[in-house]
Each structure stands twice: as structure tokens, then as C-alpha cells.
Image 1 (cartoon, one colour):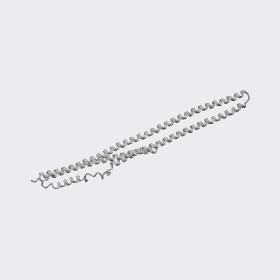
Image 2 (cartoon, one colour; image 1 turned 90 degrees about the horizontal axis):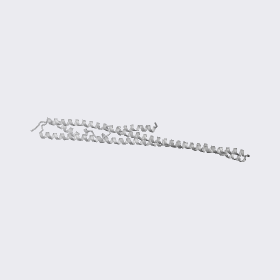
Image 3 (cartoon, helix red, strand yellow; image 1 turned 180 degrees about the vertical axis):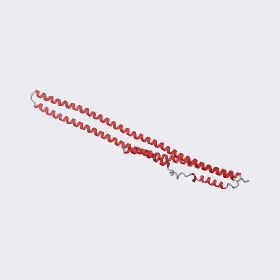
Image 4 (spheres, helix red, strand yellow; image 1 turned 120 degrees about the vertical axis):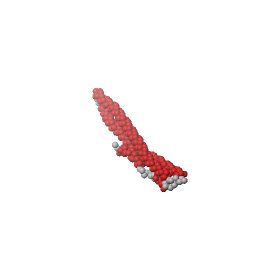
Length: 278
């Protein structure tokens, strides 16, 4: 595995890690989403329950007690609504952070993918160039061999023709002509073989180019498929982390509702203890 592929294989892991840190860090949104106990609604309820506790031994008319109960219910409802509002804000913040982290992770994966695809293009372009150079060199060597043979045969034919011109007797001239014709035939045969060998080289070069193109396309598809799977994994992991965050917020809200219910009951108990005055 080359260094770019090793790097790409680590990108989804890093992206998921960034996503988890972004969503699970408890202090990340603390400044924007205050705890319920710090809100004016919660403090107003606590203060009113304390007031009722202090008034629990003080006589009150039925109308006063009813008024206290209405005020208590209103403050309790306000605190409950505030708890729900904070829960919804927390969900929105977690969702927004999840989307930001996911987009960052996708950009990281795509950036690495683009780098590897560029590296693949350079690699396979270099292979194609090398294949072209090898083909050109092979053609050059083959042509040199046959050019040298043809040149040698031409010299032999030229020499034989001079010999024929200077030869005496028909028999000798016929012998030399036969030698000339053998060399001319050998030259024609060589040209035919040369063309066959050149055709074989072209066919081999075409097959090699096709193999390089196919390998390049396959490697590119593999990179893109792997990164598409990494992005889907990142998306699913982001949903899991977001859902875990929402469950934490929901558990916190349930605890808050329990606390508010206890304060409501404590306030009503204080009202109930108030002696009824005429």
C-alpha cells in the first residue's frame, strides 16, 4: 500500500474522531445553553417555594391559599417550559454541530480523495508514457536491424551486378543473376517479416495501453467507492453520536422534571399546612 492510500485509509477514522469530539464535549455549548438552575424561571420557583415554606404556619384565607396555588402552578409551568426550551436548544445545537462536523469530515475525505486521484493519474500517465517510449524504442531497434540487412543486401546486389557486367560467358552471368535474385527475394522476405513484427509490436502496445487504462479506471473507482463508503460510515456515526447526545439531554430533562415536580409538591404541602383564617 502506497503512502497516499495509507493516508486515505486513516481519513475516515480521523473524521469520525473529530465528529465525536465536536458532539460529545460537554463544555462546547455551555456558554450558549445555560443549566436550568441558573435560569430566572427556576430561581423564581425556588424562591416562591421557600416563601411558602416560611408562610406554612401563617394563617391565610381560602382565597389567599388559592392565589398561592395559582402562582405556584404558574411558576412551575414556566420552569417546565424553560426546561423544554433548553432541551430543544440543545437538540438544535447538537444537530448543527453534527452537520458542521460531518461537512468538515466530508471535505477532508474529498480533499484526500482528490489528492490520491491526482497521484493515480500521474502514476498511470507515467506508465503510459513509459509504454510509449518502450514501443518507440522497440520499433527503432527493429527498423535498425532490418535497415542494416537491407543496406547489406543492396551492397551485395550492387557488387554482384558489377561482377555480372564484367563476367565472361553466359553461364557465369546466369550464376551471378541467380545470386542477385536470391538477395532481392531475401530483401522482399525481410520486408514482409519486418511488417509482421511491427504489427505484433503495435498490437502489443495497444494491449498494454488498454490494460493501463483499465487499471487506472479500476483504481479510480476503488478510491471513489471506498470514500463513498467512508462518508456513509461518517454519516451513520454522526447520527449515532447525535442520538446519544439527545438521549443525554432527554435524561437531563427527565431529572429536571422530577426536581420541578418535587418543588411543586413541596409548595403545595406548605400551602396545605397554612391555617385557614376567617
